[in-house]
Image (cartoon, rainbow, N blue to C red):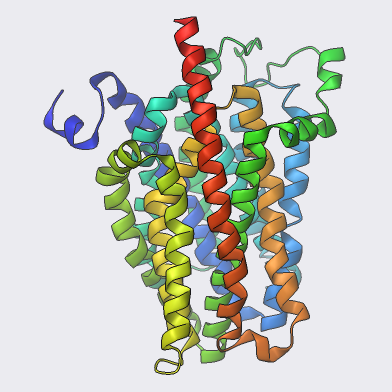
Length: 443
């Protein structure tokens, strides 16, 4: 074991696989950051407050539709096809959007399509990457290596944050969309070999995988694995319900913080370049520390203090910052300052501890319910909970969209988030003990 492997907490036989996963994560991060920059700036600059919230709330419907299609296809296609096919389709859609700019004006309908594509891309990138990673790494490796292999996405976000303002100035919207397309293409090419290897890692997966279009014969067994049956199986799984509950409160709180920043920037009357610079430097500041934590610290912290510590870190931190912002508001009456403080601290703890812990919490589940739950959360639960805060804000009077009202709206959700972290940590410990006992019996 060399010095770098010891520093990163890797065993000699893990280095090559970890490097491949890292670069896949990096190129997916390039795609997500460039697309988010393009869409966020276009929405803030091109739409009013009501139109922006409306566009976000309506566009989330694209991800659930995608999830329902993928749940229907899962029993009928190989694991490799499910992991790689959706990303290939996204590439074609993005190229269509670039061509569409020559025919369409940059109004509300086109921006809603862009926002819908961003939700779909985010969900598909998550499900493809983490489904492959969970099959390749065992339970012990999940707490030790997940943070490291997913750090590529964080480093891509850091570079994108620093370059946000120059990119917004130098590249038009089609240029940013082409940058997104290039990132997805590179990630998909690197993912092919690992997806095939991941399919072979699971002896219970009996599907042939010689071709991306290889599929199981449509039989009575497949018919029984319809969308509704898969949804019922997930909802009956005790640990899956804890994962969903935790994610719901996490996503509601995160969306409120994001909307708080967007509304604060609009009230300040920022220019397009200033908006891009704010989003970019905010990302850069958050991700600089997050990258260092994921590469050198997170794995050791999760192994020493457990997944439960990582799950509770974000809600406890957000609650502390909200209380501090409310206490200091008479002296610092700036909603933008409070929103930036909330976003920065939440993103740092989320990226450095909470997200790797949450993904590790999936790992003790059996392969089939784990992948069903991941797909359900990323394509159905996430868009739904992202939509709810926007709908709620649309129903509130204008006075509730400024000052401390938004901060008070955060408090109930964050308290429920803390409670769900405690419940899921207990469920994880129980399921992990069962999984390790099963491994001993097989061994």
